[in-house]
Image 1 (cartoon, rainbow, N blue to C red):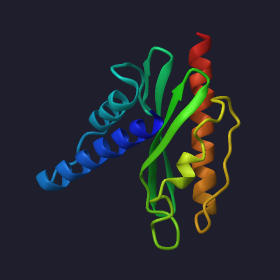
Image 2 (image 1 turned 120 degrees about the vertical axis):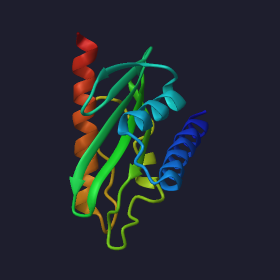
Image 3 (image 1 turned 45 degrees about the horizontal axis):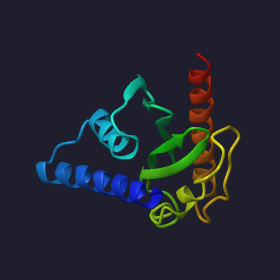
Image 4 (image 1 turned 30 degrees about the vertical axis):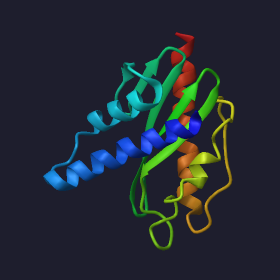
Length: 151
């Protein structure tokens, strides 16, 4: 099931990128985030913006972005109950050749970890600082999510 979820996220992301390129417009970030959240957790309630948090039942899509050497790294942490079920990085140009996060192996390393900070996975060779920045961004989002759950 989690592989289908990841496939849906990647397909939705690819669709938005393709449509943006064809139409020569930038898809509003909020529309991309809604589509990604809907494809992974279903229809949900937007709890916050900048960065966006969308909740559906006991699941949440926690979007993050962090500025690094080659530009923005943008992605989403998918949480279900107390586990990270997915991390998808959908914008990054990091590493020596700009493809450090292309395979998404780094992001998949988070799957199954408790959604309780601090979480950390091994860094990507050639993108050590950027990998740590993603670890930090994910921990910030998980900390925020835990605070929201206590309310």
